[in-house]
Length: 246
Image (cartoon, rainbow, N blue to C red; front, top):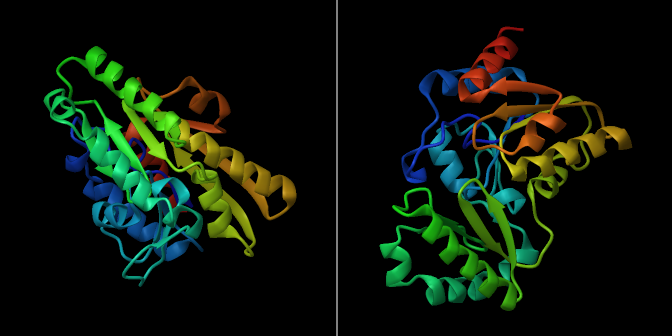
């Protein structure tokens, strides 16, 4: 069972640092972790932050959109070596764009080590904030970096293939599962949908099930490509309750 966190397990809030997994959902995950062969949270957050947020040490965390792996019992996450060499350049990019004007606009920078996320959900003027973030995106491309968009967030990444699908392939490599379920709500989760379906086609797993978590801000493709659609994090909680009762 592979699960996105923000917007799937945890409701979206104005300040991402204040997000949390509701205790009933967390208790269901604890039950499920005892019964299923593998339970992992696959998040855009750093793996260590994801573990702190979910507060379950017995499951796996795939962080920073597939670039970090934090297994149960590990004290530190392992970063994809292809990304590690880009950390100094990403840090330099942050110093260049972490300006007073950006802070005044209430655009928050999230440091993910080998990646940066620019959030404008708390901006007073979202249109002006988005325009400023667009300009940063153009600067990233000029600097030879990649840009990825999400729900009121833009991520700056190294030009290395990394997404939730890549992270899932790494996590499941060399293992066979009868059923794999992935649940998510945002654009980045579509890569995970495609990854588990490709594993099914290749025979690495017997059956893939993609769960789309519907929201007003989420992309239409989530509902279009999902096998099952649930209504928000409350719908996901009900699905987990049903799975834990089997």
